Length: 203
Image (cartoon, rainbow, N blue to C red; front, side, top):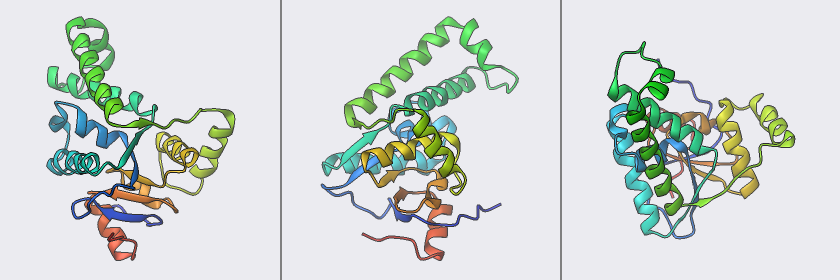
């Protein structure tokens, strides 16, 4: 069933866009996952492991400024662990706790994968962070009432606000519902919604 996005952001199709020298992008966790993780293809669609790494590489070549949020480490580590678990034992009843505590060799492999991926993130981009304070939490909760995002994305948006950044590279269509930002994506549903609602930006 197609997602009925109400598009409030400007949306850019990364497949036909060229990053510029003066661009500043926050890179969402999903794009970092496809750019840095060796086994990303196991749990991804073909376009995700080609379009996002390609666009990030173009941004690096153009000397665009890439930013990451420290909050991404938690999500990146979780996603890598889940994929490694699936590779090791695809049985859906095989629990993360069992995998984490009873297979030390596998745990060491997960740690190495996460360290390697995060090292690429930190060597490619500059950190922009947000203190998860009472003020930040309240601002995120207020945003939650009007913007169709999950809790994690609310904090990413607060980090963007604090840094004065308006551009994000992400496959998460939820971001297109946020006014005042530019979403750089290869998500066909988000791009189709933006096109039909007159929100697709060609730079």
